[in-house]
Length: 95
Image (tube, rainbow, N blue to C red; front, side, top):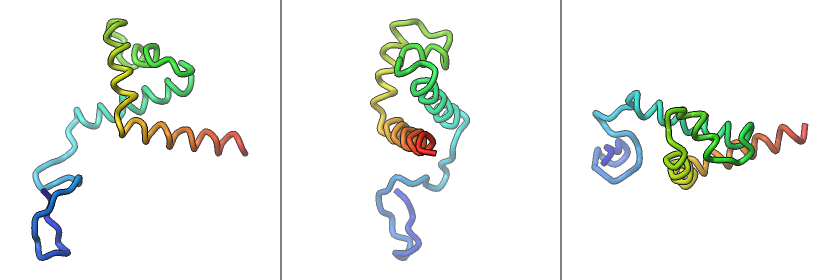
């Protein structure tokens, strides 16, 4: 629940950060890992999720990397970030 100052401080459901909640190191690290994974996936690894995952997490076993890369590529936040990176790459190619 978030407090909405526009409606006399009534509580309503939302997806914003609420009081007492903050970005922890784990959340920031996860966001960076996902971004780094996408950079590799769209760049050097040429669409190979397993190889991208193994570069970000070098201690992972192949089967774990295979499952985790698939799971990561299905996350809505990763899909949105990938679309955004692809749009940027298309605009760079047009220059």
